[in-house]
Amino acid sequence: RYTRFTSPIRRYADVVVHRLLEAALRLDTPQAQSLPGDSTDGLAHVVEKEELSEIAANCNDRKWAAKKAQEECANLYLISYLRRAPQMREPAIVTSLGNFSFTALVPRLSIDAVLDNRDFLPLPLKYVGDKDKRGALEFHFGPAPGGGAGRVMKLSVFSRLFVNVSVDDSKVPAQIKLVPLPPDS
Image (cartoon, rainbow, N blue to C red):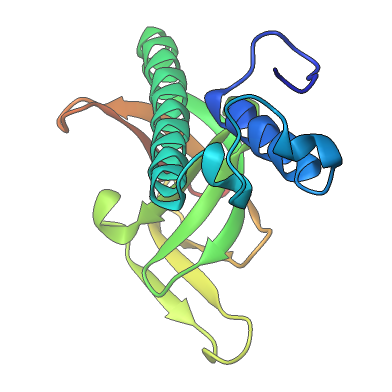
């Protein structure tokens, strides 16, 4: 016997939970003693504690493996798309700061990536501000086109900037690379 559930295609974990719920609900009924195949020691007739623990661990492992496969598939598709447009200039939003890095979200492409100073050298980058307060990162770009003075871009959380989005084939597997662009570029 099964409890009723909404979809005929359910995860194994859901079926296990439904069986346990049904067994738990039957414990206090007079019919619990007379059901064929049931024992009188609570939920033990449904599954042993150790077996339930193994089932739960396996279900969790499978869930995370499926999630990782889905993320990697989406990333592979995005890399394939980006290879057709070698460099894309996209708006981004800073979501967090580190001492020599920051995380940026590229909404149109659903990319949330850490930009580390080592990935876009030789742009000088420094953290300014007190660590206990909201700080900022300063980028020092070279002279402006036409020989103007160097440009500085100061980023804090929720700052907007433009990044070049490309594929870095030097790494295996290929990775999406974001490089900050100077202001007014």
